[in-house]
Image (cartoon, rainbow, N blue to C red):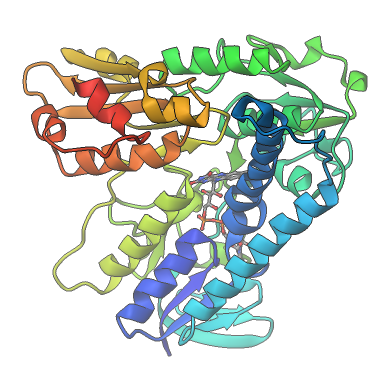
Length: 429
Ligand SMILES: Cc1cc2nc3c(=O)[nH]c(=O)nc-3n(C[C@H](O)[C@H](O)[C@H](O)COP(=O)(O)OP(=O)(O)OC[C@H]3O[C@@H](n4cnc5c(N)ncnc54)[C@H](O)[C@@H]3O)c2cc1C
């Protein structure tokens, strides 16, 4: 009898397994595809690996700005993909190594009862089950994926050729990352977004700046757009990036009556489903659909199943979001608009990266940092950054926010010079 059987070895399931292993529990981790789930195999890591190659290409192209006269760079996309695959495989074997002591089953889990799971004919028994089955690319009713012309993020990440032209439907984080990536690789890119601006959820001043930067890179952007307004024949590929679909598919799940709404597993604040011994974590709960939140929920679900000190509720307040455009975007807590909508009297500390020594040194001065605080108490409410390494700098502000620091306390910290994180102390002056 296992203490815990985890279905899905994405970031939620993997982190849950490690947490359970730390607590000396007997754990089964079940995965029908590859360890690492979407994040490692068809999401964060492969996307960022290709983006890094595009960055290197851009840097070589502007090397003469740094006094380095180099020849015209030659892009070898096959090698770019090989590098990406090597990174993914390396990380996958690292995860396998970390899972020593956990029973890993490469099989599709089928539910027999709330304590029995069928793995290709082998039945295992378990006290608890964690559902961590993740999400898949969302299809459009009128544009079904065919893997050739109408493609998903997973298709494009494994493609061995660079499309000559690419229509991206959806100007959210993933759409904008792919737009910047393929424009850098020489593809003619157009983004079609049905809303009035790109990057919903991002501070509107920063979203506008990113839109202008993408346009200056030669990317066509059509907002308030109707799908019918474009001729798909004008593009060699159509990449649909309209979000992620959460449709839990575990054969036999209906037998145990776990409550599901439109494919999403319903959980309470402690990540427990409608059954006492079945919990869920990560994208399949459709809360904050990010890898680090999935990992947090995976660990929390295990703590709540076995912790005798009482359960802790899942908190999505201080979860940073990162977008790997060039320049990068990152934010945590409340944006200016969100704070104003809540009628909070706010103070905004802003800093433009043009005035930052390190931004000049690395030749990346497009950037803006905004810290939103409560005017009356000085409490930090949120921060938004656009700029080089924004995705790293946000970690400091996430820590400040989750430690409930106020402006005065953050201001008293000494930031090293010259660094990009100095943008924080500059904003607070
Ligand atoms: C292109 C792209 C870029 C992204 N970039 C970022 C980023 O930069 N940062 C970030 O935080 N997030 C990013 N994300 C989102 C991130 O990938 C997801 O939030 C994360 O993967 C969710 O983890 P999970 O464990 O909940 O689910 P998943 O990673 O989806 O894993 C679920 C696993 O369950 C398995 N499974 C399902 N059903 C069964 C079954 N019946 N039996 C056995 N196994 C089963 C699946 O095969 C899968 O491997 C990105 C996503 C995409 C698509």
